[in-house]
Length: 320
Ligand code: CP
Image 1 (cartoon, protein in one colour):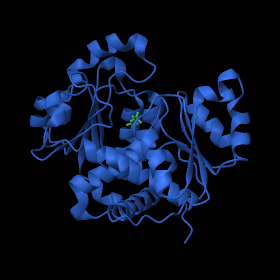
Image 2 (cartoon, rainbow, N blue to C red; image 1 turned 180 degrees about the vertical axis):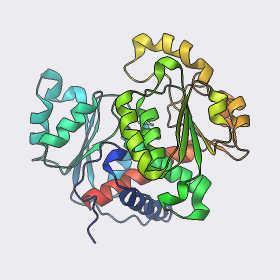
Image 3 (cartoon, rainbow, N blue to C red; image 1 turned 120 degrees about the vertical axis):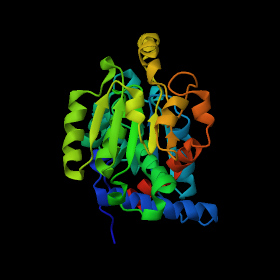
Image 4 (cartoon, rainbow, N blue to C red; image 1 turned 45 degrees about the horizontal axis):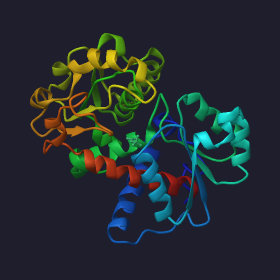
């Protein structure tokens, strides 16, 4: 059966239906087992995938390079500065040309509109490897991790996430805050987001998130009180307080947001078996305490591993 994901671009979780997310999770689970037993099917044989990165990366870059190779495909890593884009060639022209050479584009960019333009003018699928607004590959790895650590006994249906509570603390107007709000709205989980009044999620994102939440029944609470947000949570989540490209406003952000650090007080306020998540890279002592990072509740390394499996699943379903 041909997947509805065939040839589809994925720029954020908005682009995926509940059924498509469930298919990605099931495929990722299979690929994870195949990797454990050394029997990965070479489903990307003959496919070339361009990776355009305008920002630094450890996890996304390495997991895409490794994952494409494990599936028998050829990854073509292109530093954004090496392309003619840096000398003024348009995104639209780059998309049209690359579409003649490769089978898909994975891109990490600053402006989300650059991804929309790549997808609009190219004739091949585009996968968001992080933009200033969204990070869907991370969100898919997070859903798989929550399923494995909190929800496995109930099966891989998103309907089974209903009733769980996720707490996001830190910068509320960042790509991971947006994507985690969407993750909750898509899965039907309740979410409490704690942030300083000057760093609340923006109206454009909230309008979209609220629409998705109306359909799933997810309850969304935005607060300035991190302990209230953490109360009875099943999942505690944070990300870097200063995003890539924000060096100039970094010190002020750190000062404003340090009160939202994921620490042992938040862990105590959450359920006794709550898990601690962070997409990495982490700055201990800023968005998360060293204690929380090393706590037995932290599932951060499994979360990082799952990037590999969900991205392989996504590529297999889009190009396989
Ligand atoms: N979480 C994440 O995207 O990590 P990198 O920035 O290292 O790719």
